[in-house]
Length: 321
Image (tube, rainbow, N blue to C red; front, side):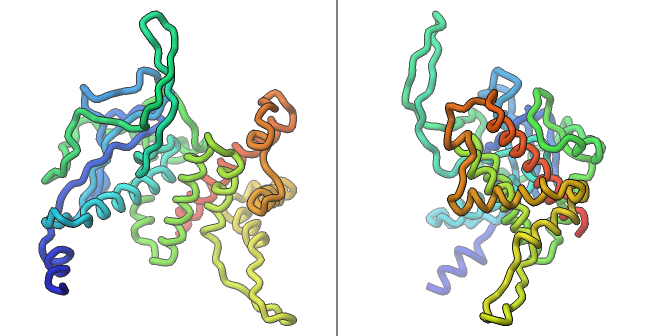
């Protein structure tokens, strides 16, 4: 058994280029390669494309990974998914236009269908994207022609994350940021990996629950906190004082917030009330109160504000390393 495992997982390996379809809120035109590790490639002509500007636009992520030549094992699928997930989570953190990988488990939905006469019907269909381009492993990266436009870093991040009808762009410091991520000590890398996952999930769950999305957004910052604790002199239990650490962390990596202490304190208070079942945002609890409702409008604004604060805070933490 030991000999067989060594043959499958260690000796019998080939360096391959995996491919997977991912999606961006902005249309990808051109390519970007990070060293000899991965690259973003625009979807070739002839593949399904969204016919509107504001949509989830497909592109191909290519990445290097070690492939086992034993076709009977699932190790290749695991390695393939691990690489794709890791790169997309970090790219989602570094780009102002959200990027997503295809879900591992796809669901069925009722889908609207429009006929030639303009009348709609409905059909129960499975979520998914079927490219006409083969996604089989390659021996080398696809050659790069046009490159994705790089924008001055300060200008790129000026307005935080947003969706637009423009083409997908990247900050001019994208390579330096990726270098920082992959050179972090293992404990900080793991905290950032968790933070990036919480941040990613805050975006993907928002259409289903703004309350869960809020918890996920705040948790992405909480994941970066040092979890050292003092010991209570009375009971001997650990005192983590997370809320105070959270406020100090925001003050350090998002300094403008210290000028608004009530708003800063409210961020964690709302998160705690939501996480402990004491509260729900109105968009979940009372969906009939539409955006013209004053309290609903206030909560929606607070949610957008928190998302931007979280985004900038994590980026500033990374840049400080």
